[in-house]
Length: 128
Image (cartoon, rainbow, N blue to C red; front, side):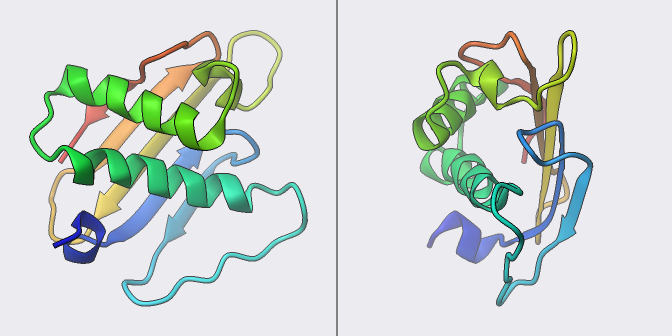
C-alpha cells in the first residue's frame, strides 16, 4: 500500500520555501484544490508535498541522517535548483526554509529545514 494512501497528509506548514511564506494548510483526505495567480507557488507547493512524502514512502526505515540526504536529493531532483539553498525565499542576508508535514494516523510529523547556503542535505527536526 502506498504511504500517502495509508497515511494521508493532513497539514502542511511552510515558511521561507520559495514564494511560500508562513503557509499553514489543512488538507482533506479526499480532494484538495490549489488555485492562485501565476508565480504564487502552486507548483512548488505540489512538488514539495510530492518530494517529501516520496522520500518517506520509498524508504520507510531510514535513519535521521540518511533521510536528510534523501529529502534534499528529492527536492533538487523535482524542483531542479542549482543547489538546495536556492529554494529558500530570497531575503537580505542568510534565509532559512522550514517545512512541517503532519500525516493522519502518525503522531510524529515530518519537520525539516535548510538555509540558503545548503547544498545537499536538510536538517531533520522530527520524522515519523
